[in-house]
Image (cartoon, rainbow, N blue to C red; front, side, top):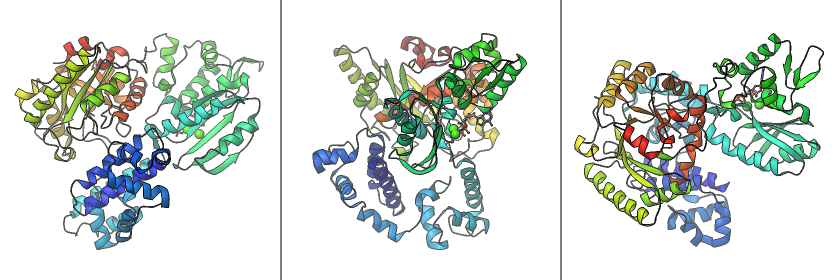
Length: 575
Ligand code: DGT
Ligand code: CA
Ligand code: CA
């Protein structure tokens, strides 16, 4: 758990250094932070076993950063970081979470107005004290207020990508207890909603006290809201709450159904039960004589009501109950159906790993191919590649493919890029070089604030470009931070359909873009999609299930998702 604390400090250090205009160093700290966040082993264990030398063996960790890790593990702080904090005692994390606020702006606002946290930032903006400052202006001030409003709406909820790994650990620990006969996640987690309010767990046990004692004394628990025989509720260090209910076996299916939700689905299902003369609650399904007719499993409850079992991702009262009755539930894309990832950044640009490391990691995941899609030259901060660099990188990929072939691997690395869509819809790489790619992803990475008609003209031009195969993160939203840009989704889908352009379902936890409802609309419009991780680090290849879950919530089947197809079939589809 020290991994995360250190990653946070290194990220902040990068921000501080950036504020001071230091070059290169911020990137080194960001990279180390990313590595630590994704490290499977505990950095403390690594240090205890192998000392400073073992720390330096972690990719992206050099001498100076290794020493800082050592200092933190030994003293609980890093003096270099504390110095910055003394000079600039502000809640940097909180301030730069506001869209439009960067470290440099935060520094100016502290120096000129004494702003140290979000509340003071809001006060300053409301009092119009920010607009007169040099380099700010009324528009920036309005954007800051808008950003704060957006943050307020989304606080209290956690990204699926943050909540699920935590919940998986808790669930594994519960299931490992000898006193636990059965345990599951419920609530929005089980439905794999893009954000999660709290973690819900259910268990069956003949010794509930023991299970509850274990649950409330987990190491990450900082507060116990309630500690009972059938229900306990706690707050985790990460800031979110979790509940555990212990349920008798005969009601387990009914409780799992009830606590999985959604509330809307439950209300509609309860009405179906009433219409058929039953009563449904978290204890079971009961007939008019109050006899329990189902409840041990979810399946028998749905079956008794004349419905097929409904995958939790669909339980949002968006037509799934009628579909279950009429036997036309979608055959959802499965979590094991993806054959390759087409959106991976390598160390030629903002990524951390070499193409070969990425290829071997993808092979280990059981993929048949991986597509390298580096940023292109317009994106300077991400070290975007120009034409010459792209071609040189392609030669590296050719050589690697030959090597893998010689090793007898049935695996191919595809040559791609994630080019930038300029304001006028042109692509920042020449057609001649685009034509030499196996596939081209294009995305909006700049000038997000554009009137809708201009943004649509921009996207339209890009989709009509004969080289552009895929549009990445099509609406540009960043969960908890940035609204989508002005996009008319219905028109986007029509354009994608007419031009044969594939739309991305970006699995990166902050993005999940397209979102579930847009995925559903895309499917209905006959638009093909691709689920990509946008990994900048090989460990982020494991973000794939978050994208799959949203595809499932959007009713997508294998047929709708081109990277669930055999490689040859999808290559022929590309333009
Ligand atoms: P969250 O935690 O905000 O991400 O969303 P959920 O869906 O996990 O909601 P939560 O934790 O408040 O409750 C878990 C489940 O319990 C919910 O999905 C459905 C069920 N539930 C909660 N309150 C009600 C209710 O008032 N009526 C019905 N029918 N079901 C409820
Ligand atoms: Ca919940
Ligand atoms: Ca709950």
